[in-house]
Image (tube, rainbow, N blue to C red; front, side, top):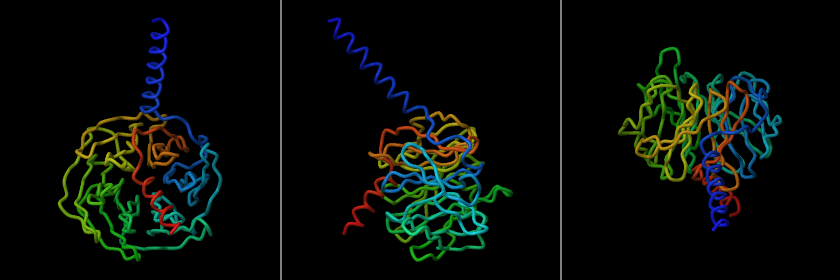
Length: 303
């Protein structure tokens, strides 16, 4: 009986530690390596993590699974990266908020090209992408407190998908690709649109409104739960597909700017912290949609 009690106490302790690990982030990369525009992030098929503005603005870093960072590429003059999204195993797109571009990066050759340019954009901020290559770009106007969403077709053509919004920031596609989510940093709203196969948005509805704190990048898991970076609040909030807050992860830094999923089973989250100039990490309960997409990219590359 004593041995059984000891075992139960031990199991309880382990479960407590696991629960703790899921509600607080821990350090990943070294503090101060990134500028105050630390953003991104994204994970490739080998588990490497990419994030923008390493040491100076206009750069992209690559980090291994232990958080050791080094220069990957420098963007063209006048370009500064923000959100990153993979389109296939060896290609990712970057929102270039100073150059009004969507940049295309080849991981193998490290070539950087302009995939789309739209002078009418205030600033391409964050990106979402479908499996067939339709890109959605949030476009906030911080001065006026307004924002829009742009659609970029698989061949690089841009069109305005939604307007008359607040300061659009984090943006994401649902796992079934029938919904598009976007949040407004200043107004603290999270909106959901119906998403057609051609990229058309309709039927805008309010999913959730936070009472305080800001919002930045967000990603969805394979069950449709939204992981939202609460910039200035020092946390990542998890919303159910119905818009209910089901979990909160406390972060070390306060200015959480973005999030991505990676790791061996897709449940490792990497977050960028602008006040600490680094990345932190925590374990999610469910794998991320973008990790599942990368697995599909890997399978397609073998065909």
